[in-house]
Amino acid sequence: MHCYSIQELEPDSEVPMYEVVTSRNEEDPEWDALVLNCPDPHHEQTSLWGAAQRIRGWEAMRILVRRNGGLVGGVQILERALGRFVRVGYIHRGPLASIDDDRLRGRLVHAIGAYARARHLTYLSVVLPYGGSPWVPHLKAQAFGISHPSLPPRTSMRSTIVLDLEPELDELMAGMRRTTRTHVRQGSRRGLHFREGEQRDLQTFETLLAALCQRRGVSPNIPGGNFLQELWRRFAPSGHLKLFLTEQKGEQISALLAFTTGHWFRVWRVGWSGEHAGMRPNQLMYWEAIKWARLNGYKYFENSGFDTDNARAMVEGRDLSKSVWCGMSFFKLGFGGKVLPLDPGYCFFSNPVVRAVFHLAKPNGFASRIGEFLVGKAMARFRRRR
Image (spheres, rainbow, N blue to C red):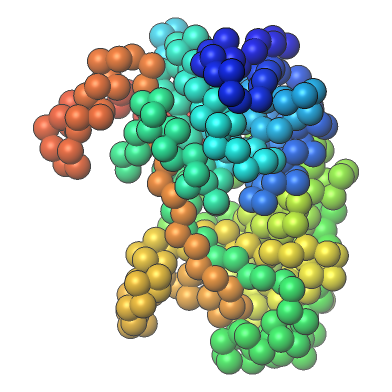
């Protein structure tokens, strides 16, 4: 652990004294408590996530900002080497601050840039929190640019849908699309059983996820090996990882894996065998998960991920024909909720030449192609290992 005064970076006698602490502790309850109490907390900013990622070769490092001894902000950075000469970093849904202080935001982003330079990170990706727009001017001031679509992480969501759980269950049911409401009631009457899963059900979940991905023609988007078991070991004992399944006469049909972070219940991955569609197992599973989240005190139910084009059209008030709807997004919208377009990703290159080319690049232009060429090979390795 290393401490230094942030005023040594940007002296300003008119601002409070901030102290920066860099920490590589495997688990950090104080930091996790700050994450959980932020308005837009995310499990990938917790030390538990960082510890789980160690089995995949990532190192977690946190920049913690204190004022008068109390923790007021910070960020978790995942970092790894790709070969001998390339080192990349990744910030997901950070940085975070527990107080609304623009000077704090500026100094924290300054510390992030200084850290990236000191560590000679070839590339640092930043995916902001949902309410992350106040951080943008500070990122730009430190030479962070909007990430090009060809750069990682390509798996980062560009929009999502969130259901406010404050209304009573009857109101939530009434707010659904009529056909979704009908399908939920059909599932309830057709002998399906909904239950909370245990660690021994993780293999079943992976099988159901693989079946769903195969039908969609994509690869499962959870790392293989023991990663899922490691997530369970880290998050489940404190109740921050939940698994739910729907069954029919002992046959597991569909499953849902969710993170609970602060006031948020966040659907992370789902699986479905493809069987018994007429019994409406997925509609029932989502509704029962919504009920569980509300009854257990969560305020927001996030159906993570929503088609970006569909989200943009909805925000702009444009009507969408059935042919242009993404099927999964249309399904999620049936349960109600507000579609949230998210801030774009940002990135930083420590190499000043690459950084200059990147900032000069125009979409699909010559400079953009040069920038892609300069970082392409290293980034291909990053994508495979993310």
